[in-house]
Amino acid sequence: MLKLGVEITMFSINPNKYRVDVEDIYDPLFEQIKFHSFNLDTEVNVYGALLNIFSNQSYNVSRYFDEDAAKLIGDVLKENEFDIIQFEGLFVVPYLDVVKENSKAKVIYRAHNIEFDVWERIALTEKFTPRRSYLQFLARRLKVYETEQINRFHQVFAISEQDRQSILRFGCETPLEVFPVALDFEKYVTDPSKTSFPTLFHLGAMDWRPNKEGLEWFLDEIWPDIEKLNSELRFYIAGKNMQKQFFEYDSENLVVEGEVFDAVEFINSKAIMIVPLLSGSGMRVKIIEGMAMRKCIIATSMAAEGIRCENGKDILIADTADEFYRAILQCITNPKKWREIGENARKTVERDHDVRIISERMLNIYQKLLTV
Image (tube, rainbow, N blue to C red; front, side):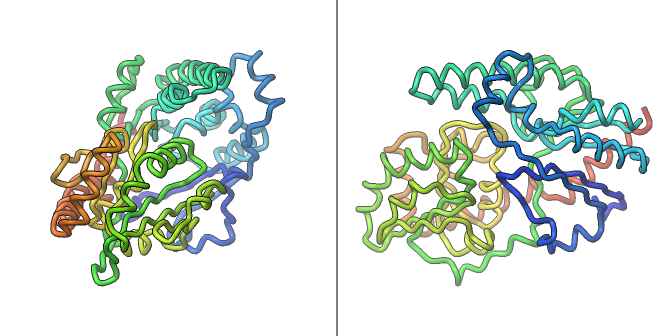
């Protein structure tokens, strides 16, 4: 957007759980924008959760609202005149009233996920009945909030065609367009000489429940058989907030690295990406990045949801333990196969996820909104 001449101001909620030290941000991009952030404790606490039961609010979302943050947003809006204000994800939507009270800008909601759908699917996998009931309660509350808010915007952006269809089904009357994850391909340069084989890897935030549950399933149900295929085979697990239990799986063939300094370099150094998601919604950014790095992705249908890919051509889909086993066996016994899929994957994401093309499309919608 900056290259298209757009002036950008960013306001970010900085939750304690994912705290980023603003002083440590060295990205030159931040020198070209006006940036504001607000540190906020969004942790779940038993007292707050119990009180929320007797309110009519969604606890998932209400934890992200803070009066001081609202005041800061109001001050920014009073000091500046904006044409477009874009809300990135549902958890900043509680500040919509503040924006509308202090600005005449057109407001856009970019849905990163269908949030209530994520929680409905998580509830289905919960075996402990009281917890499952509470998760279902949270999902219902979240659904009410999400469906009520969607028509308060001038424009909605969905992350995938599947999400667009879901948003339409729950009553969206606002103009709705699909804008998938966008990548700057200049930052995704592969170096095959640094890729070790045979290697598998998994990369993702490990405090996100779908990632945690999917990886546990893979390690318990699939990895013991995979490990026997080749004594030289290595499986690398990396990601932020690695849960303590995963280090217990560490062995000669399985390396738990935790958070990595350079995700692109980590992806480049490994051959085959494993994404065993069993729940979730939206579009998996790490799969898009893996495809951009010419990796063969072996993923569940759920994980690949929303990505315009073709099983056997630019990705391998595996939904059962047996399908994962056969897909991995195929790749490590036929290196030509995984390299071919990786090359096709790069072509696919260049077609659908180029940041330049997507930015131009988005800017066209901004300009149309301003003429209405």
